[in-house]
Image (cartoon, rainbow, N blue to C red):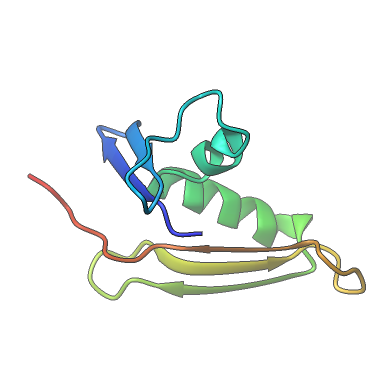
Amino acid sequence: MPITVEVQNGEVISMIYPDGTLIAVTDPNYESFYRHATIERLFAELETGLSGAADEVTVTYDSTFGFPREIRFDYIKAALDDELSLSVSSFESLK
C-alpha cells in the first residue's frame, strides 16, 4: 500500500496512510513499514536478499539519486505468498 514517509537525518519523522492518518507505533503494520522506511534500510534489505536470503531479487535504481526505486524479493521460488515488493515513488529531497 502506498504510504508517505518523512525522513530527516536518517531517522523516520512520520509515516502516513493515504487518507492522512498517522501510522502510530501501536498500528499492526508499524514494524513492517518502519523496517523499510529509509533509503539506508532499503539498501540493507537489498543486500540481505542478494547475499542469499532470497531465491530471486530484482531491482531497479533511481537514475538521478541511485537508490533502489523498486525491489522485488521471492524468498522461496517454489512457495506461494512469500514475495515482497518495495517501491519508492514521488521521492523528494528537501533541503
